[in-house]
Image 1: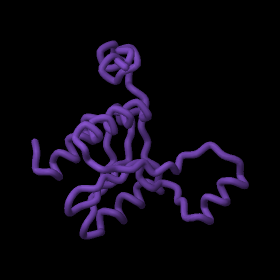
Image 2 (image 1 turned 180 degrees about the vertical axis):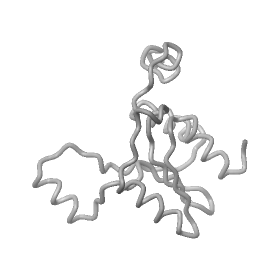
Image 3 (image 1 turned 135 degrees about the vertical axis):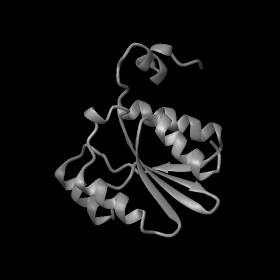
Image 4 (image 1 turned 45 degrees about the horizontal axis):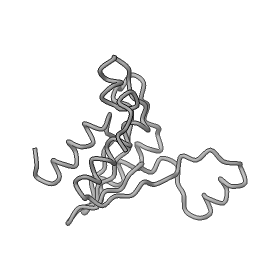
Length: 130
């Protein structure tokens, strides 16, 4: 199925709109799949009842953990996706704390990426591609 161009990041950028974080992440994940790079989305941004949020917390969910984990041969990357325009994207204190902690690990690298292009560049740089 061919996607509707009006629903793509490229179309939004062409008409001067800032794609939403979700759209940027979908574009990035599509690239990861084409490249056959293993990854997983950490679904911790739920809209849920207070009771269910308490259950998730008891099961090990933490606020601010990055959106994606990307598994490379000798490294794990952590990506917190944001909209491409930094003026409309805010990084929470919990997100900053996780990024800082994950960057202390020997086998990991974490980054806030503003847009799918920046995320692709981050992964490519870790793979030695430019």
